[in-house]
Image (tube, rainbow, N blue to C red; front, side, top):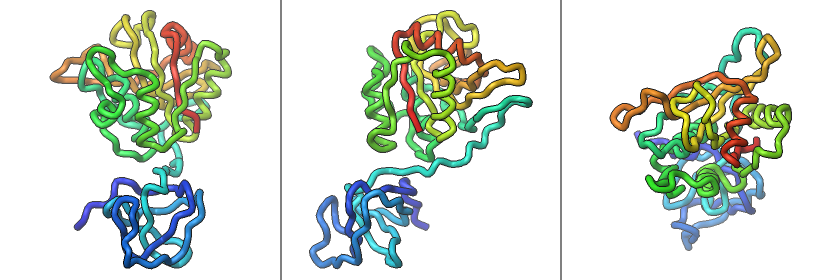
Length: 261
């Protein structure tokens, strides 16, 4: 059988003509006819893909529309992670994507955030799009641009954590996670034994935010690195930490960023 198209859903970014046969790139087939025009902002299920055109159904018709006038769209699924007993909040169950180089933490964290949105984009694809390299690692704005490339323009937004109060920071993270828009944060974990090292900057993906039974604010962290990391056997880890500690690590780094749902 033919493989299913990678993009499952799209949203039209402009009015989109549905045609009976696909074109090529942005050029319609000269022999095609227009069934109807799909309004901007319409979410469509992609049934097939050919030459930059998507096969979709709308208004009682099934036809082809140019992908150039659409953006990837992922309906937020119901978070399916388990909040610790007695806690209240949200946790999204996302598998660890261990970084496969000593400098790929940003790419791996980004890939985990994309995976939560139903986008199967590899760590290597994120790294290539962001220009990740052994000298600079991953630059914040380049990673943001790379993830917007895969998830749709405007999905990821840089935010400076220095201006956040603790409760505001926690609530913003929780809101983003609830919409299955997992924050990607750059930290300087110099004082945290939970991380496998105590120097430099490091990206992680925050997959959960909850208040424990004792009233403590906590985050579930998908960390692409662990103390057992090696180039031949990279291993990530999930850790459960105080939310306030993560904010301090963000402020120590000087900046951090995350996405809003």
